[in-house]
Length: 248
Image (cartoon, rainbow, N blue to C red; front, side, top):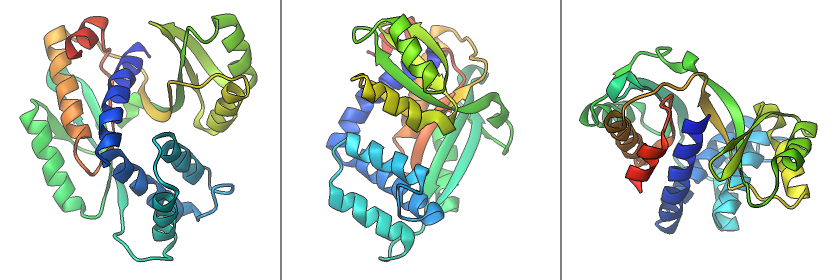
C-alpha cells in the first residue's frame, strides 16, 4: 500500500492547486451529477452522492454549485450528459495503469487519453487487461502525530476497517467500500481528521521499478490526471521514497 500512499501525498499537493483554479470543482461536479443520475438526489439514500458531496465540501465548493450539480443529475435542470468509462493501459516499465473518466463524448476522450499515454511512453490496452490487478478499497491517511497505533487500531477495527499500516509519518487505514462511512464517522467522532479519505482502486500487488522509470510513470499519471475528463488515475507502481523526493 505504500506506493498508493505516496501517490496520494502527491495528489494532495496537486489538489490544492487544482482547487484554486476551479479544476477540482469541475471534476467533483461531474461526480455529483453522475451519482445523482444513477441513485437519485437524496444523499441520505444515495451513499455515492453523499460521498461526492462530502468531497466537494472538503474543498470549499459552494453550496449553490453542489445543488446545481444534483439538479443536473436528476434532470431538474438541463445540462450535458456524462458517462463513466475506465481506460486501461501500461506505462514505462510495464506498470499497469487504470484511468477512470467521466465524459460527454467518449470518442473525443478516448483519442485524447490515448495520445497522453503515447506521449508519456505508455500505451492503451484493451478492456480487462489490467483491471483485475486492482481492488476497490476505502483508504484513509491519518497523521501519526495525532494518535498512536494502538489507539487508532481500536477505533478503526471496531468500525469495520480491514487493516492499518504505519507508512512514513502517517497511518494508512483500509476498509471495504461499504464500511467507508462508518470508519470515517468513527475517526471524526474521536477528533481525528484524515489527511486523505477516498474510495480508491488499490493495487493488489505493487510492482517495483527503478527510479527513472518510476518518475516517468508518475509524470504520465500527472498528465492523465490533468485532463479535464479524467477523475482518477491508479497504478500498481510501488512509489519509493527516492521517487517521492525527486518529485518534490
